[in-house]
Image (cartoon, rainbow, N blue to C red):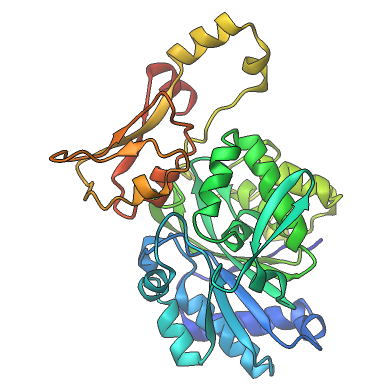
Length: 375
């Protein structure tokens, strides 16, 4: 399985159009899209973040791809995603630059959930997916290159979580607070949509390091990734960030379900063993199967010393997005308070508040032991 890695250091439309034209031929997209009446482009639009923040798929990437598809006589092109929390998709499309792209290129913007949702069962998980996604003849998955506070790394597999409409995504955080179980659900979703996805692309020209997927710092990686296989792409992209890819649950489970071995993955010789220097990684949640098996009193002592939880800083604007997005509804805003309050006795540490806050007002507070382990 081939993973294409190309050096592109800026959002230059001419260079990106040339890149996508070459990629179109490399991946034989003409054959894959022949007879398909439409193609759905699925970007990463986590929330209302401007393109330069490094949170969302860049609009120049989207526009360049659309222009190449149209030049190849692919006419019926649609853009669709569902942002996190309570963010309005119309506002997200505008802030991220997707609305301007859609208007300029005359393509349709979809509102996931508006035309119906279908419930499916896959690998023991109940999946709620937008009906427009399930009816799409072909999907091109356009993710963003970022660290992630819960799943460690976000790439092509996790990007498909945006096909779950609106606040239903928060329900999954409530049902599966364990990162490994949450990852297994993401992979079940990926497997459900895998046959429709004709190509996976990750925008790594500018990505995010540190406390991703929204509160980290933008970083210029200067690369674009592409592959028919989302699992192969994520394995390579995570390794280049410095992760041991086999420790990332989404990578482990997706490769296993794809019957993909590391020896099956091909990359250019110049990228073998390449790692971006000093990438600041997100402090992923620690859920140890060992700790869960030890006696209850030992576990209780460990978690008294080792703890982490979301807290608020002075950037808070009391916008209520955290409270409305909390899957267990433990965040309240009292009259006269400068920041919300969290009922930590019922907090499931899904970090939805941290992930969806548009102002960077939520941070992860840690005990001394947690600081040592998560450093």
